[in-house]
Figure: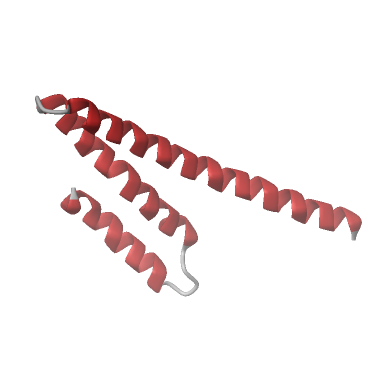
Length: 91
């Protein structure tokens, strides 16, 4: 899994080095660090005899966490946009 995440780590490092930092690439890097291990956990859960549910649950929770992260970003965007629109309308 470490090698699977390495390209995303490099992408995030580049995004941080950019001036100003590229927030979209940073968000994609964080998302990749959540989702890539889910694939490994899912595969492991299918292949092992001991405690496969633990691995499968870990995969599911990783995907749910990534979905919550994306939903949270969307909610933040909506909330901040609503505040900007309210300020513009009142101005």
